[in-house]
Image (cartoon, rainbow, N blue to C red):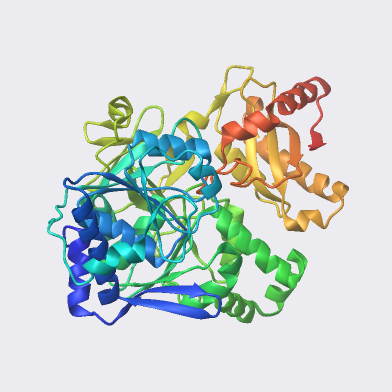
Length: 549
């Protein structure tokens, strides 16, 4: 393993200068970037940064949709010894303001981004804006083409080291202020090498880039892995063209949070017309239907399909299995990437798998998962107290609760902070309950509430299938799920009511984080008052209640 990103870039530029590394799709046209072309752009912007700043270590912001110049700006800043701060294109003005000021950001590369009107209002005084090619800004700015042009063919003087701080990755956590997780060349490359082996990534593998590059998973398992494995990256033009672009790539590896797999599922069902039609087609010829769907999605050449970042309902994994699409569950977080994953030869649905090679794992008396490994983050930027809480004697306190079965498979049972006490003063773990309830075709998003309630209340968003049914049919199906839950759980955790949201939960309405995790505190804020009222009424009447919002 080489020790820095720039080492890999230099290696592939030397060995395969004309081989395509990056491919951008724009309508019916492709723009390809070879290793040599990318090497030239990256080092040109690194040289400009050296000419602009006398010292290294400045925080360089990056706000853009996924595209080749995202990589160029990212790696160019690293090559010049600076620290990249990626920002989500969906971040609110409050979050953007916090991140830019907390890091004392000096430069912001700006590409296509849907939240520019919000970000521009809170730009720090004196910040230098650089527009990526094809982007026009009303604010005073510099242009990539003007900066890189004079330095093409030059190399920066700075020599990267393995322990250089290269990035601050701000968590999109479901509670509290974002924390800037520090990343070095080593804390990126070591996990990439670890999961490249586990995921059976091949040299020259194709990768599909569609999730936000501000998230550590996309940055490591696509950008970083393509760099380490001499891969080829295809950029999705936008989420609206996902089903067009994915088959054009046919990736060997793909990562998606459960929400993405749910959306693809709904797309497949819509094409058949109904779940009943899907069932009938599979019953008639499962092999042919599975082959057709794998090819239509562009997953027919995938060696490993990862689902992580949030709990994946087992019912969803079973649904994909019927098409020969094998979703592999895993666990990772910004502080410690890829320590536990499922393997092709060892897979148990509902489990995140077993620890990978070189990982030490411990479970506390409170069932919290602790991880020790090479390649973990050094800590949180300018947050010594938070760092001391999470990183203790070499162990990363993940904040996730787990159980281990008799065969050594690990299961996430929830977040330490997600556990709540009902009015009886007893703890409830929401994740297992949500997983049982999710085993129905009528709900797409779920969140169990119950902090201080007489009973728990399930809040949910209906699936496309449910919207085609009458309320009576939907309520009858969900009532059966409630009964299934209540048989499995202790009395204090039983569901007393179901609330059905008319509006899907999304990043835009702030119920989902940029990485599509449900913000439980936001669900509580939106539905908590009514949920508590329904729980109380259910306890009094001994009935399971439904409420359509």
